[in-house]
Length: 230
Image (cartoon, rainbow, N blue to C red; front, side):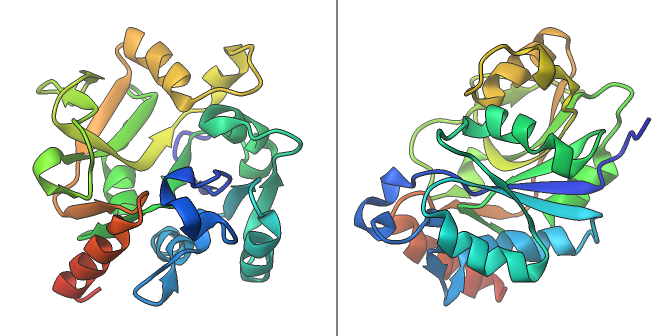
């Protein structure tokens, strides 16, 4: 049985409603930050690991993403007629990703510092972990609106509430998805199972991170990239 991830899932199906008019004619992953599409920053990080395959799920305005990603060798999981949310979307894409744990990435954030996937890969311990979430302390989570998501104990096990922000990168075992009866559901439902089994962990990211889910996040992210000369 495969115990370490060799595939990357990019979440790119969302409507991007928080971006307001910017996503009226453009899917959120194609919005430009410092002259490049958001999803290309995620692809850069993914390719540094030389994964066996990279998969993206599509729903809102899929033609633009398909035209951008297919020539780059990204496999596509089309969600029709309904969008399936992160959990349902990941489950639908398993036949493309392969068995075993996978990396997943949100495509509406910017990382400044070491590659978060490499950090997760090096810290992954499948004997005790069902998921390892790369989290950012609230003080280094730029553009974040609201509180954090998790608290970690000294061993890295996490529980809800606290000043750690989930950064949108994780390694996760997918077998538990098959026990969820809904078609459309969030990965939070899978994380809840893992939390109850004491197998949900976090890795604290040492660099900075920016949420580009809102229009004002674009300028913040561009300033962050400039300061890190990324």
